[in-house]
Image 1 (spheres, rainbow, N blue to C red):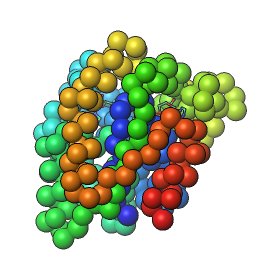
Image 2 (tube, helix red, strand yellow; image 1 turned 180 degrees about the vertical axis):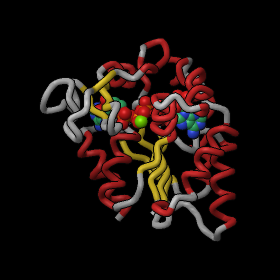
Image 3 (spheres, rainbow, N blue to C red; image 1 turned 90 degrees about the vertical axis):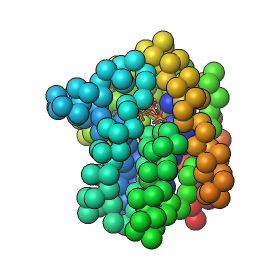
Length: 213
Ligand code: AP5
Ligand code: MG
């Protein structure tokens, strides 16, 4: 199963992608998580990506494609994956389609988690992320059992650097300009499915399961 998650920043792509990955036993590949891990580890890639991310801009396609193509070459991708945050531009979507077509392969579904902009800023302001395992929670909508501690690994929760309201606004406008056109792209490819992302996390997940099954 090869799935792409679409949706605005904060729509719940990561939250749903983790659940899908667990259900189908396939890797969850988030380019945002990979960039953040590189920033944390002080790598050259991390240093180059950080400047763009802190401003809410996209990391250049060349850098992103190099990173993701290396990731696809790893053995755990053989049985499929759920992509979260990639592709994010038409150029990235075309590069992905070509690399799959070269192997006689294709994507199965692109799932758009649809949430209006008004709801996004509230979601982001309450998001808490685990620096150790990438687990994502929300102080109101998806709270941890112990405040500030990850339910999954016991790690410490933190607020993402790019979740400041002004950066969220910039990320939203970048999304509308550069990523939203992918909805038409995948609709034209006949694999677009849309779910209402304003519902509870488990309701959204059930809607996705209906589509995948
Ligand atoms: P990335 O990490 O991908 O960020 P994003 O797309 O902005 O998305 P988020 O991770 O913020 O949101 P999400 O949809 O995963 O929502 P979540 O599940 O956390 O990218 C970060 C940056 O990296 C980019 O800005 C760019 O610079 C760079 N980058 C990454 N990929 C790139 C690429 N391919 N090309 C170029 N640059 C790239 O949920 C949000 C919150 O809401 C959480 O608190 C969650 O608990 C809560 N929540 C989730 N679902 C629900 C629900 N149904 N009801 C209530 N609350 C909910
Ligand atoms: Mg995410």
